[in-house]
Each structure stands twice: as structure tokens, then as C-alpha cells.
Image 1 (cartoon, rainbow, N blue to C red):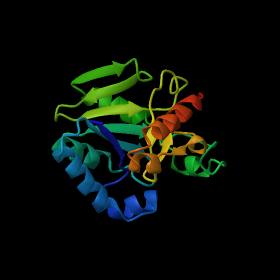
Image 2 (cartoon, one colour; image 1 turned 120 degrees about the vertical axis):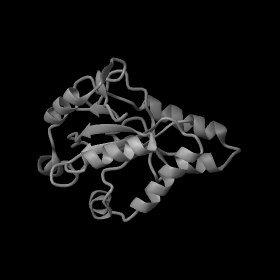
Image 3 (cartoon, rainbow, N blue to C red; image 1 turned 180 degrees about the vertical axis):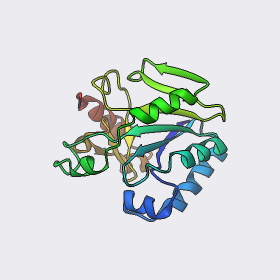
Image 4 (spheres, rainbow, N blue to C red; image 1 turned 120 degrees about the horizontal axis):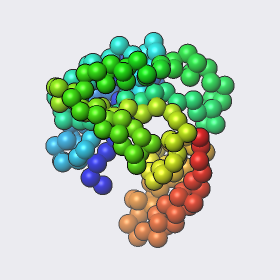
Length: 197
């Protein structure tokens, strides 16, 4: 493990708490500082832009990333009815179309790269050194995905959108004698993968 992605929807404590339901922003910021100190590289911050919650914070988040040498992943809120609530109310209330923001970034960028191996994501490098990768829902989203994700509770997921298919690896990781148990769990999670979009 030499790189990490961290979800950070806000640098404002009250907004952070509203989004995540916890007052842990200071802990997350300390953790990011420590991750940088111990040499994780790259460190990417996942910023899901949400109307009425954090849509006015993009410039502050860009500045924070430049100051710390982080890459910003600007993510459009995805409709994930299979796993979150099921009725789409949160999506309807908070979805923010990134197209106008992407157009603005495009006009400001010194360099634009398209990551063909990653759903044709666009990566903008701004004059201040900011690197911003944009992620919007598309039919290509699942195509070629090889990622596994670990939640803070120790659950391992083969798909960001299928929390129902997660398996807990915490005990297997803590018990150094059970490498085969860990490998078996990873294999089960990989085998359970299926396209969401």
C-alpha cells in the first residue's frame, strides 16, 4: 500500500458533520497530514460536489490540495438506488451537474489529460499546480474497474455501489496466522463483482 484515496466532502466542520454524520473532520485532516509525512503518494481527495451542501467549497478544496500536494477527484453525485435508501430522494435534492464546472476547469487548465483506462476521466492541471480529476456517472464507469475498497469498519468491497456484497477482513488482517483466510475473503469479493451501470 503506497497510495490512498480519502473522502473529504468539506473543510467546514458543520458541513462535514452534516454529510458524514460525525464530527471527525479534525481527525481526518490529522490523518491526511500523517499520511503525507509517512510517504503515501499520491494522496487523492474524493470531493463529491453536492448542491446546497458543499458546492461553494470547490476553490477552497483546490487550494487545500495545492498546499498539501494532493490530487483532487471532483466527483458528480451518482444515483445509487441499489444500496442507498432506494428512493433517490438524496440524489434528487443534492445532485449537481458537473458539466458547467468541467467547462470552467477546461478553460483555466494549462494541461488536460484523458485517462482512457479509467472511464475516460478528464484530468486538468491548473496554473497554480492543482491537479483535478473529474468523475461523472457514465456507461463506462464499471468497464475495466479493478478496484477493491475497504471501509472504516473493515468491510472489503469489490464495488463502490454494492455494499451488500462486502466481506469483513478486519479479523483476518489482525490475526497474522490467517493469511489464507484473508486471501479467501479477497477472492470471494472479487468473484462477487458484477457491473452496476
